[in-house]
Length: 605
Ligand code: ADP
Ligand code: MG
Image (cartoon, rainbow, N blue to C red):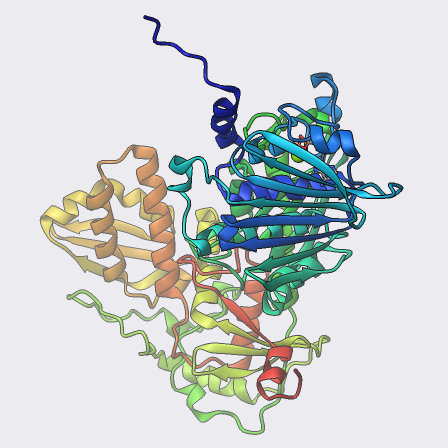
């Protein structure tokens, strides 16, 4: 006997429904899209029990007549296209005519609808494949209520998550729609309470304030770019380097106003933030791409969540570059090259006690000859106490003198260094607030980028007394083949004896650094990494060396800086790429907005 049986139309539809509606948020998306396709300017969404009990969407769109109210629940019933040839020029969300059919197959749907010029409205109920339509008095537009989702598909219902999780997915969907259509007034009610009320707005930035909180909105900035030759334009809002999340839920991508998840787009956005926010953190961003519909395929995913581009690289590059530029411009505003000084009434006496820092931009020949004296050899591994400044007596006198030099006048009074806080942070007064720069993180980044330039560009000095580094014979054999790597970073090392290396010259900034420790650490990396492929090995060692050298040479937390040193550092930071963070991903600067300060002191609400 034949084992194959054709499923009944109703059972087949229940199975097919799973493709379109996997969870309540998918139904929400379909219903909101229908309302937008119907030209609504005001949409309210009511949710109960994470959408499992009720999803109701009320719109003021074009409504339906009797025939459509009956037909809209049928399979492949759409008013939006007549043939697949129309897909490339599609301007609506819907085109497959399967959303209402799918939703109705797995729930009970009540539809109230009225066209603007109709005398009366209609009420349609779809339940178990039977549709009834009767006249009723109702306002213009469509009010569609979906009850008991998946009541007849227990296998699917079982996989639904708890109310909070499903509600979260729904909120995410509503936010995406709100970003795509700032001109639509959107309201969301969850279990009887209003959660969102977003009247029409002109910009994405204003939408951010409605959908997220006011603090987030303050850290968002607008971006815009076009590639007219490729028919692409990009606009949106992105968070600055001071604001991030621990997950991707604040990232939205819209393509021709359609909310999509596309790994290429989010990768491009994250690349734009490379080195700007710490690893494992995500920006908040809503990016809207408008593109010639002929250059995308929206029909590649059952729920139309993904999209395929004809030229993905162009779009990704545009996103990455635009985001990068916006972040750079924002930081440039915060880190001004020319900062003026606040004139202290007393010169802080301790500032002459613990100076070890020379601004990076000073040329080596400006160094006091006395500085070239060797630091004593340390046989054991150097251990650094982070708050123990390395003192250089020779420098103290000259810096002490420099403190009495009159304050340098600079043009821009709106960016003033007002001092150093906790011997660690440089305080800059600005119109927008108080900007704090972490002196170690900032200097580390400046040096890291300098050390990344070609060796010839790094100022080096010959040590008056070359330094000996002692290590085991075994370690010496390990490091010996790689000494040229150090030379590329301005450290010239040779073998001196069977267990000693000799350092003849170093980059200027490293002259007081614990060279023994740098070499010992590098031996450790070489041991660890020597099994990976050559190219990767060299790249990793170079990176690590650069970071280690920058860290050791940079001014430390606890080092007291003079005003001119602070000014130099800020200037150098301004001119440095990737200046948002140190090589380890810590931020270099932080803005305490005047608004927040005033709020704290209740001068403002
Ligand atoms: P699609 O959107 O792909 O056309 P749907 O199943 O979502 O398919 O909807 C079927 C049809 O029902 C739509 O083409 C539209 O004509 C009508 N419709 C659905 N929702 C609304 C609404 N809110 N207002 C007016 N018409 C609607
Ligand atoms: Mg639809």
